[in-house]
Length: 228
Image (cartoon, rainbow, N blue to C red; front, side, top):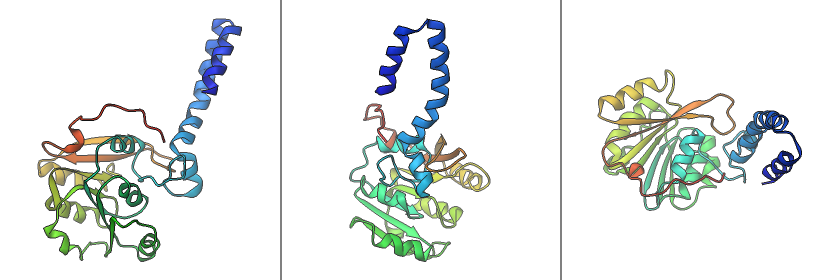
């Protein structure tokens, strides 16, 4: 990397104390810039949509949650989303099937022409009243990121496959606490991924809820450096 090569050159030509001071200042200044560029946060901010550095869709989860999920073996899995969007396109590339439920008519129409064949889009109201046909189905991953979140959380418990997981975005704050308490009362454990999200100025939290033998926690993959 150019920066590392420049640092090696500077180290040879400077007294150690001066080099250390310049290195500290450079780290303080350039690390946020590098983060924004490499994650796609800069592009997401300008475009007002969740994108990676190459302009491809990202979920609007926190970056730690995205990195955790990106490295998991999800081929052959099924996803149910309460709230469709960039995450629908992202998941469609990584799982066997996605059912995405949306209550915004104009956004639904926009997505309808963009989603691939393994995505089923369902238009509903905020109470998700017309998803009853799904009651005989079960999903490996359920994402709650829209509609009436608490009601969707109640529905999600019965629709989750054994060994699956529920993802709740924006789980911090008053919107998330009632749902956290609901899942806690139903025997779910929780992992919180706190940090920045694409194009968002303040940190937030994306939480993962699971019970025993969750496929995301089996540890079959090795840690990998994420390339955004």
